[in-house]
Amino acid sequence: MGEAIALKAENIQEQFIVFTKTKTGETRAVPIHPKLRAILAEANLPIAGYLFPSQGGKKLPHITRQVVDKELRAVCDGLGIEGVGTHSFRRTALTAMKDANTPIKNIAAISGHKSLNELARYLEVSEGDKQRAIAVLPY
Image (cartoon, rainbow, N blue to C red; front, side, top):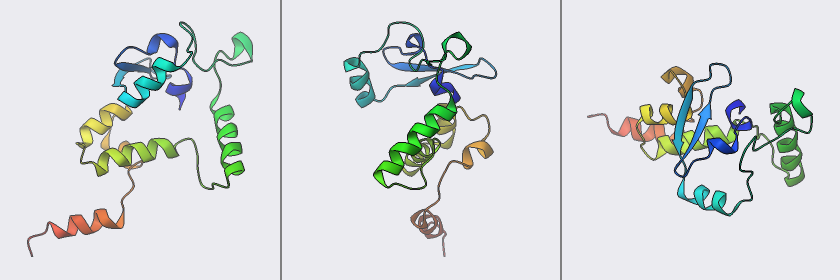
């Protein structure tokens, strides 16, 4: 979330979004999904500066995690959806990649996780996953 709220217009390139880790300054380029690329092409994005600027001026140059969480909860409450948090989308995306048999190292490279243990916390395991794992045993 920290990397997303700190995105600047300069981070959006033709084929990639360049994320910068807020704590270390490390960067990683993540390919933009074709559907998102089309949405971004139609969007009226700024040509420079933060994509999610704060109303707090120089002290808070971009919105905070708390603001995003509060807004997300308000929308979900209005829709009657429970159990959604800011990491729900990350968990869903990473699990979808896993379910599509994307190599785990590729998922880690996209998500920015340095260790597979960190990544594993985000990957849901379904009953179908367990059944498929058992089915490969040669009994």
